[in-house]
Amino acid sequence: MVINETLSTPVLGEYDAVVVGAGPAGCGAALALGRSGMKTLLIEKFNCPGGAWTTGFMNPFFDFERKTGIVGELVSELKEIGQFGGFWDKSFHYEYMKLILERKLKEANVEVLYNTTFSRTLVEDKRVSGVVAENIGGRFAVLAKYIVDATGDGNVAASAGCLFDLGVDGDFRECQAMTLMFLVGNIPEQYKSGLMIYEKLNAVYEKAGKQIPFKVPYLIPVPNSHFGVVQFTHMYEYDPLNAKALTEATMEGRQQLIDAFEFLTEYDEEFRDLELITSSSVLGVRESRRIIGEYCITGDDILQGARFDDAVAYVTFGADLHTKSNKGQHCFAVRPYHIPMRALLPKDYRGIVVAGRCISGAREAMASYRVTGNCAQMGENAGYYIAEAIKSGRDIRDIKLSFQLTD
Image: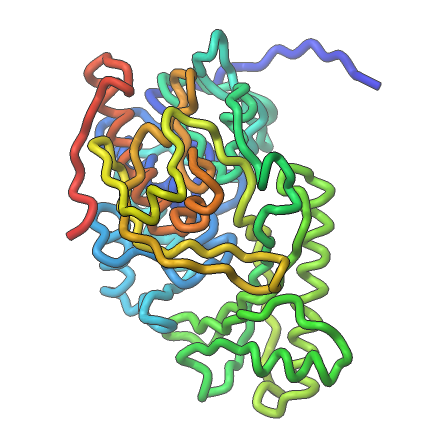
């Protein structure tokens, strides 16, 4: 059955750039655009900036080391107020991350809309001109010279008709496991520096007569607090592009975290007084669409340390695939490499840039560059590319900028 609708959608405004998604990549892009004098709108479906950093409870801050720009600013400011350090000396407090990002967005004159959901892309002859979104005020459109897709899943690009890869040859069942992070309080004193807690969890699962779902779990304390986040739940073979599947994965994750908490408090004396606080607002999806761009980052690129004259990020983080086959992680080292701007440009499309884990790359490469420090850096420098394209009136593909990607 199909319902035919005739809609009149009001245009809320016209911008130089609209960024969809306020995660690390989206915040990076919006800040660069705003600081460059671009009239910028940042749309976010939750009630805060930060994405995986904040609504996803993601710690630690991976691949921040030696990065300049916005990543360096965030780490420096978190350190100044005593809210960075802890586990592996690279963890942070979620609420202070939100606050710092909001201050920076305001200082950059970025207009922000929370609780606003992307609906569809406005496109004609492969040129993107805006997006339609919805919030408490209803359905509306915004027009822009450039749209930045920082949704993580490539939703804006896919709506425009851009081609993409998924899993292995389109098979979503090969996508990496999903994780629902959760907070716990009253961490035993001896574990306040953090711990890989496989032996603990495996022992209590055996006592409960159940099989452990993941073999590399971590308890990650938040600096200057008595609580921490647990990376443990792993849900396999769910379609990351299907709402029903995501719902079922979330429900399974919640059951897994309740099991883990109850088994620890019942069967392990050291964790007897552990407190369960809450699960994250968003399900952690490691792998979904990889938009096909003007360049695809390959497995050879990350192994050989590829360099590009249009580099927008410098990646040192090793490839990390959370696989069902061993209920663990398949990891391998990389040689530090560049991400080229061309990988952020959907093939044959104009007026749209993607940033974050949805850029153009092989899934093994994505398993390396997908972490938050890299997403923020590529988003920021993509923003500067867009600003230069708008100021100069040139196609973004004809621009070459040079960045200091490390200190």
